Image (cartoon, one colour):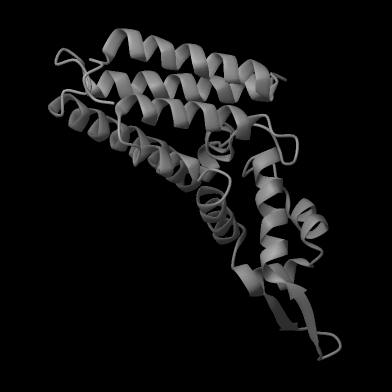
Length: 210
């Protein structure tokens, strides 16, 4: 989508690609975190001056929220897709295997915008930190609800604690984020995902529901 903003000095509109600029901003936030991404960095990657960025996207905080939404609906969309899988094991397998592929993909910044962004936030960016923390908590709660359903369907053992299992899966996922940032390859992360999935299969699933 091409957008035109009125240039203050010359009085004529300056056209730019809204989606491309937002994509570039998302990558900057992904790589540097919210606080680590300066306005000068955003201006450089978006090809816009500060006034134009504010006119098109609002404040830096508003721009970050738009970038986060794009991230959730794009690179991280596999997380929502995982929850729709027919069995608990399929949920875990898809979530972790897709995470392995995405987190170490060299076509974009490595790691996770949500996890890295929250860790890098100070008290000055409390609202952004709360936003990112809330996203992670919501995903963990959704996993717990999915595993609760799996217990009722006899897909998971009756002794399974859905809340703890959800926390386990999220802990593995966030550990994979740290590994990716530290230089782990996709192959290494795929092995981690496969082993974690196998442990869930051996320790929690009944094998009654395919």
